[in-house]
Image (cartoon, rainbow, N blue to C red):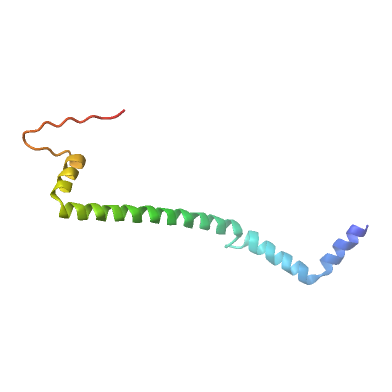
Length: 98
C-alpha cells in the first residue's frame, strides 16, 4: 500500500512526468535517437580509418613516384617487378607461390 502511494505521489509531479516523457521520446522515438547516433558514430570511425589508410597509400605512391623520377635503378626495378619487363637477351621465369 505504501508503494502504491509513493508511485501515485511521483505521478502527480507533472514536471517529473514531463521530463520522463521527454527523455523517452528523445532516447527512443526521435529521428536522432540513441541507436541512430551510435550507428552514425561507428560509421564515422570506419570512415576515418579508411581515410588514414588511403592517406598512407597516397604518401607511399608519392614516394615511389619521386624515386622513379630521380633514379634509373628504381625505374628498372619497378618495371621488372610490376610489369614483368626484361632485357632482350634475358629469359623470364615466373614462380607462383601456392
